[in-house]
Length: 84
Image 1 (cartoon, rainbow, N blue to C red):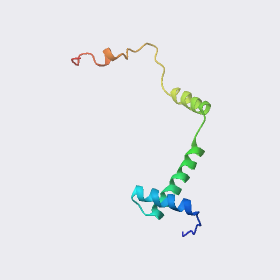
Image 2 (image 1 turned 90 degrees about the vertical axis):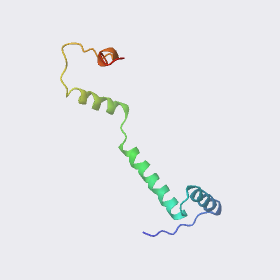
Image 3 (image 1 turned 60 degrees about the horizontal axis):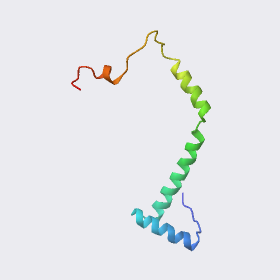
Image 4 (image 1 turned 180 degrees about the vertical axis):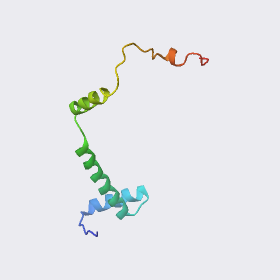
């Protein structure tokens, strides 16, 4: 798709400077900027709040069996006999 966009002179100068700093043509710089902006919008649409995440995490954890005994997961027990 081709788009023709009129931009103010100060914005045009800024676009050219940023594109030059990035080492890419202005057209590619603008395309990358638009792509990034669209991707950010998609990510915001997918975000869930803390309460929803907490519920999901609890449901996920409930899928695993509960142990009836304690487990020693200390650093010492994990690395025992390895020369530390």
